[in-house]
Image 1 (cartoon, rainbow, N blue to C red):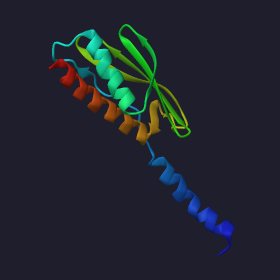
Image 2 (tube, rainbow, N blue to C red; image 1 turned 135 degrees about the vertical axis):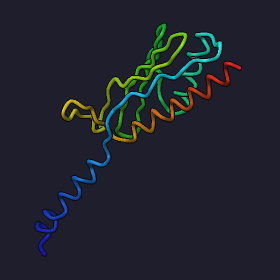
Image 3 (cartoon, helix red, strand yellow; image 1 turned 45 degrees about the vertical axis):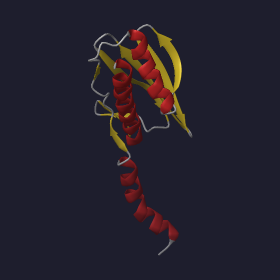
Amino acid sequence: MSRLRLAALLLPFALLTMAFRQAPLVDPPPIAITAKISPDNVVKAIKMALVHRGWAVTAVKPGEVDSTLNLRDHTARIAITYDARKIQITYVGSTNLKYEVKKGTPYIHKNYLGWIENLVTDIQGNLLLLGS
């Protein structure tokens, strides 16, 4: 079998494999702030989680922390907004993370969702630590 024919046969499988790397982009549900915790400690809990996971804090404003993750040739940008009751992580943009909108639904590399899930877990733990 010629190399060209073999490549033509394997191309659909390669494309299918790449499709499995994407997942629908859904921002996580808000993180509840249940303890009596000061706004300063909320920001501290967010920053601790970001730094622990390798994210760079790019801006801090009242009620919002912006952050960027640079991992190899991938970049993800998020905004984390907060008030007295909740923290919300929102996707802002990315580079080389296979972001695209298909039929009105945004998709992104599934690793991004894992990175965000880890942030949520770390922020929740930090809130418990700082609220006690």
